[in-house]
Length: 425
Image: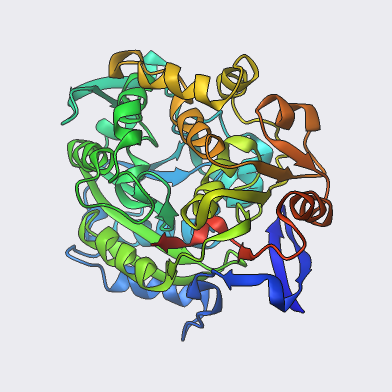
């Protein structure tokens, strides 16, 4: 019997699978990577050894307005560790600096005070200037150019008016941008609605280069790089985390050079060979990434990459926040099936891209080839069914359903943390 632990919400679900049924277990070696230093030391050493950049304290000297972009409540960036160190480093070079922490909400809702305290700690929330970016608030935005794709580039005014712009984040495989981190804090992080919609258009999502772990010729990544350059993103601190959300590696420095180094580290650890099977079980890495169905599509793409044409996909995701996007939900609820969703999206031109269309496109792509069973005891089952997926309250129940359809001898591939791997054919 093979025993695995599947991340779910803030815990892990134990699962036992007979050895004879196991086709493969796909895991990032990041989950077993043991760094030589503790988390704080990794961050401090990265800042003391920046890649292609001066020390942050040197960059901060003489700067009046400094804007530090950070991730929102949907990203597991360990800001309770990283933010205090970053703020201390800035103030070493400029004790009187006017620092604004700008939350890169992208296309998401604003981060609440309670979520800020959970993510940043009460000390920072009570004593630092923190602002939520709002991509739909035109008063926050300024047009700064045209993207390589042809879309208009609108970015947060505070960021554009800064004397020094830096960001923190984490690097993991990303299902259409290749990798998270770096330039992504600018686009979509602090970009306007029009810009995000253009960058996430159906043509780009359909590109064979817009896939997990792929940066070369990726049209979405190209736009993001352009946006970061226009924003004059001068310095980044990006970390790599394990399945306990603990820092195992950190890079700092130039927004391009440091990000490339971090991506290479992740690729070396996260690349796994596909093991197509009758049933593929995965997750969205637990909290905070599995708060809604919208985010859970990411984990599904890992299962998709290791599936046969008719494989059945099981994903465990708490989805306590429901669907994660009204438009995303209604697109499926109002359609006869995923084929109708896909046809409608593919005929939508870039300039008419709808909110959350990209997530709908990827989910439709998966559902056109696979039945998906979403496992949750915290989400309304009707929402899941409305979105043309099957529902199960537990992994055991989902497996029973899958075995009835695929047979008791069906082969099973396990991808315990779907957002942490780069599945290669």
